Amino acid sequence: MCKDCGCQEGNEKKYFKHNHEHHNNDHAHPHDHDHSRDHSHAQDYSHLHSRTVILEKNVLSKNEEFAAKNRTWLKNRGIVTINIISSPGSGKTTLLEKTLDFMKGKIHCSVIVGDQSTDNDAKRLRGRCDYVYQIETHASCHLNAEQISEVLPKVVNENTQLLFIENVGNLICPAAFELGEDFKVVLLASTEGEDKPVKYPVIFSDAPVAIITKTDLVPYLDWDVKKCRKHIREINPGMFIFELSAKTGNGMESWLDYLKKMIS
Image 1 (cartoon, rainbow, N blue to C red):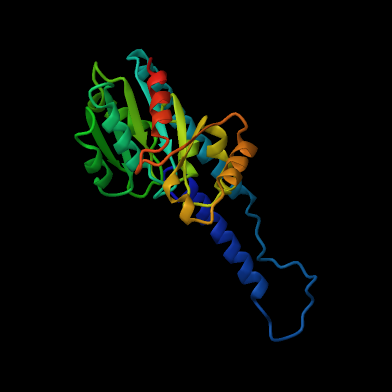
Image 2 (cartoon, rainbow, N blue to C red):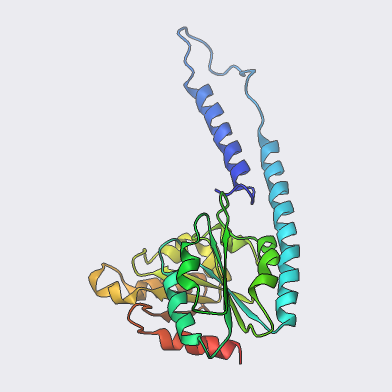
């Protein structure tokens, strides 16, 4: 897990506590002894939980401050901002390629791309819109609002109408970190399990829009779109759901119409 949001520290402490207790339980004595005796080396680790909670609150609090500033900055310029979140390989970049190709010459778009390493995705998107900026997060598994704040003046100009933020491939941490976006969009590929929404309920609860991608592969998979929709509705009954294939273009029209209405 990422080192920036406190997950790393929390995991290290849980791991340490588990190992210590495991060591105590397995440590056998060659002679008989009374197991009811209180072992003097038993320790109380309850303070570790409180320290982790405080750290998490501090990190999220700072992030919220930057997110609020970003939101005001973008709204003052009339820019609609969409934070796209999914697991790796769900088709975020391909969807953006096709979306930007359609928008070119009609709607002014910019993109911020987040990846732990490389600018591969940014290279794919350059030339398809006004501006693309790559953020490499290195050890972190999500973008944060401060990173977005630092690059906003470089990414948008007086013509920008729509800003896409392609977050790091991860369904957990990006859900907790607001970036100043108007709303989140979560992607779920047909190559993933239909139960992803109930396994990762936070992002499916927070995002008002879900896109089921790679629908062209459904005939070749043991995958049930009705079951997937059912799981989405269990978490977020009012969620707006698109089904599309960026490769074939099937279903793209509804998604593009939705975006056009967002900026009208």
